[in-house]
Amino acid sequence: MDKQQLKDCHQRIKPFIHDTPVLTSRLIDKIGNANFYFKCENFQRMGAFKMRGAANAILQLTPDQKKNGVVTHSSGNFAQALSLAAQSLGVKAYIVMPSSAPEVKKEAVRGYSGILSECEPTLTAREQATQEIINKQGATFIHPSNNEQVILGQGTACMELLKLYPDLDYVFTPVGGGGLLAGTALAVHYFGKNCKTIGGEPFEVDDAFRSLKSGKIETNTTTNTIADGLKTQLGDRNFPIIQEYVEEIVRVKEQEIVHAMRLIWERLKIVCEPSSAVALAACFKKKELLTHKKVGIIISGGNVDLSKLPFRPA
Amino acid sequence: MDKQQLKDCHQRIKPFIHDTPVLTSRLIDKIGNANFYFKCENFQRMGAFKMRGAANAILQLTPDQKKNGVVTHSSGNFAQALSLAAQSLGVKAYIVMPSSAPEVKKEAVRGYSGILSECEPTLTAREQATQEIINKQGATFIHPSNNEQVILGQGTACMELLKLYPDLDYVFTPVGGGGLLAGTALAVHYFGKNCKTIGGEPFEVDDAFRSLKSGKIETNTTTNTIADGLKTQLGDRNFPIIQEYVEEIVRVKEQEIVHAMRLIWERLKIVCEPSSAVALAACFKKKELLTHKKVGIIISGGNVDLSKLPFRPA
Image 1 (tube, one colour):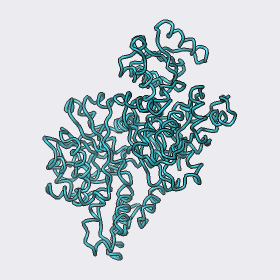
Image 2 (cartoon, rainbow over the protein chains, first blue to last red):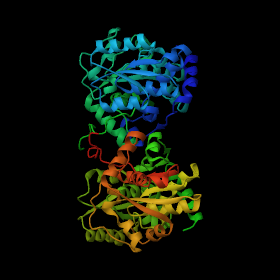
Image 3 (cartoon, one colour):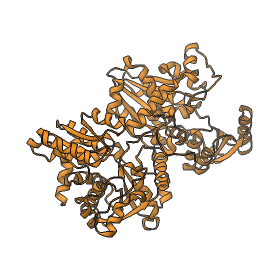
Image 4 (cartoon, chains in turn brown, blue):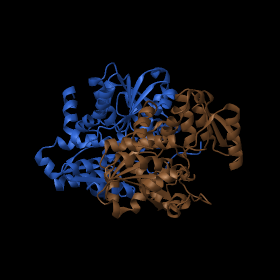
């Protein structure tokens, strides 16, 4: 994927996304001994960066493909993103979700006109339900992260950040499926000046960290993390990009995620997901490296259940 | 207070405040059947609109007065605002706070170089402690809301809002001490076009509502509301302004405050205080009046204790 493809992608999706604001905090800068620039994708349409990749993937379909709709399996932000992007473009979106998913997530998909198919909460059931929709409707499958058009779309958040702050020394993102990290690394490579990309990942789901060490895609046997957006697996499309363009992956503990999340909520006055806080938590583990540096952070999203927050009395 | 005074005030405080962003939400518009414009003073320095009035009050002092510092009694946002404004202007701020105030609030004042004096949690002790500082230090007393310079300062948030959206039909603010509502009403009067100001107030502390009815300043015997910023009393400087320029005061129930607060957090992805949500809750009670209207809302602040949130499972 080259520089022009990223530029074209950004032009293509612009009418369907927000150019989200960048926030700063003197106190967080003081704590981290660096200058942080938070690109707030929690303010993106449907509340997460996933809108970018979903919009780009649909916009790249042929007219015939658009007529038959798109399908994905996701119980997270990508389900909402594909539904809203499809709605905005007059395309049908079929969403396969385990019947055990929270009602609020099902409602959100329906609210964006997504056509929900519930299945048993197993991998086999999910893949079968998806395949049935492909066979019956002729819908095009769009993977939430392991798809080149999705990766390009996710990279546009960092492009906007670098346009405002071209001299960033580092950009940090969380890593789950790897779409955001891979897209960001491409944007940093093509639009940064001596800028490096670093991923933050919970110790509890450190498949990306281990994959970079071993040179092959590793899996997680358990996914016991508060950062529910990061439980997904690296894929074969984004892993090579991450191998080539990402400086390192920094692992963080659960309590470090909650601490960083609280700082973001208290100081930036914004609602972000635990996954977003993983990037700031990773920065705090690299304090020496980042001293007096300019550091971009992608706040990936803001869709949280407010009745299940992790904050305890200070 | 005239138009020029408001203009001068805004010019004077500009270097010391943020021109905070205005956010919108399609979903909240749909619920309220109106177009809402949220002026986000939770993003203001120290996290609330109070920074504006505090800065203006200090900037209007004589050089001799500045030399001797300022004093106030507050356990809320004004304590932090006066401390930070004073720090920014190289002036000493003496803050009288009951010893029973939460440690986190004392820390915040100290963090902004405020000089903290703790007293017993009674009105007499508070006034005595304040008077002692005035006598000993020659400090100038700045009331958190019942002060003309403070009222002018608070009005500048609405001036900025009307500059971006000159055609607003209504502006809603919460009312506690009355400084924000009075300042906003002045700004609407001088800078709006057929625009009206409405105050939102919890039923549990409805002194402003009753004062407007009776024509004299009424008091609250209890203050059992989640909107802790609104427990304070109307004063004789802001009450006449409110009488003259405020269209009406709308009372809201505690559960309506929590509902509106949750919508703001979930849809705007911002952290705001319960007091801020009172204004939106009041809008929802005036749905017929506001149908298809353009409505400004001052989100007053974002300083909340994240470990004590009112959100229950949906």
